[in-house]
Image (cartoon, rainbow, N blue to C red):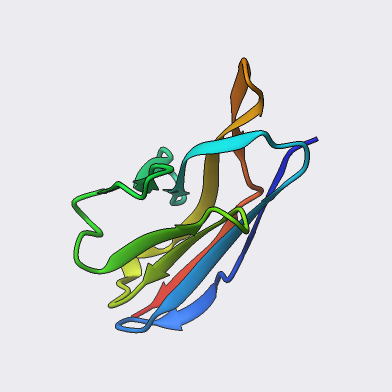
Length: 120
């Protein structure tokens, strides 16, 4: 069974920083893309950032220049460094990964989510 577990959420003042981590575990052949999404109350889940297995990155316009996604393939970890946080960044942040459990089988997996709250 594959699991994604996020850590690092919390409460921070506007202008502060947080670092989210997500660890993948289980029967994993390889991990392709990984990323972070977020969902604020009353809103749809939205993409924050993604990173390929070769570390090509993509960011939502709203976080460009403030957030940095990275990964450690050997440890099956993905990180989200969030700087200059704003109240509008408040949301539940979800880790995502495209995980191959066999050479011919893959699926999208999601973490349970971690709350990030930015106070003004």
